Image (cartoon, rainbow, N blue to C red):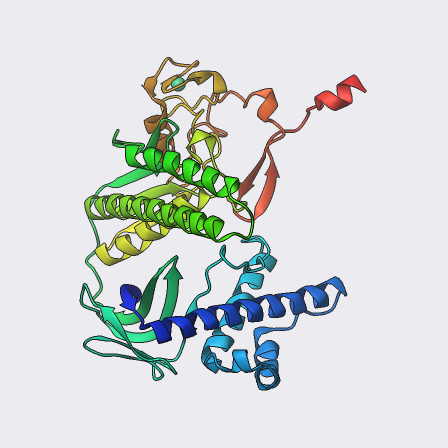
Length: 401
Ligand SMILES: [Zn+2]
């Protein structure tokens, strides 16, 4: 089984290398915005959008005119245009929003060398085109054959991420049990075994520090050096929070991938919803990165990740199938139909578990009570088709008019 893994290492460019890398970042950002603008102009005229191939073909003439762009390796420029194309394709397929402009200080620019023959890993570092060897700390051994290499900056630290292809032996079919995980309201996660992961305190504390640092920025004069310095402070706090969260998600996904064979999660809404009050804990992006961590970790242990629709999972009774918002009492769940009691978040996870084989506690089940009125206009996505939940309903606006 061929798998792709990324290995990320801290690199320490010399001042000359760093200056050049920063110039490349600026050049690539300009190239992204230029190519993005070209696509927007074509689209606004109703013309066919230029493909990555078209844009890469124009690159030669552009690089001949613009010396600061010519300094960036051609492969790196071409890869950026491929990435932009991929972002647009995701948008056309309604999987993501429109690609954004890249803004200095806000967006990261990846410097990716997509051809395995153009870079090289040595004992002490990475040999990158035009830069020579950049010192790296290989804190863990690399496995597989490197096939692409990306340099990114996080505020003032540089990292290289090496993508490798590895032929691993097929893991044995698993006999470990199944579990469903739901992101909770009061807790970070709840699983169908009754396990609860509380919201981490350190993230809350970090968010307070972040708010304070952001106030400092807003007090300082625009364009001043002191404001820039305060902005770097904010960026570093963001970086810290991101790492704390990533660490936690890695630990949790590893735990589930090791102990369970099948993990069931809710299918994420395409629009990238942020549910309830936990938006700050696990936002849409956090949840999807948790799911992708689970996916590749399960892949290595012979397990699978199953996505099921999440509609009404918090209002459904797993015992009798009744759907009613009145069953929810904050953290408790008490069914209005049969009196079944459970922790609300755990209950939602148990409902997800029951939906695993297409079975759906509640929806269409025997003796199911229809969803409450205010919910009837809600549109539920099932697969690719859009299904209106209920028929006869007059909106309050129509009644008054
Ligand atoms: Zn019930």
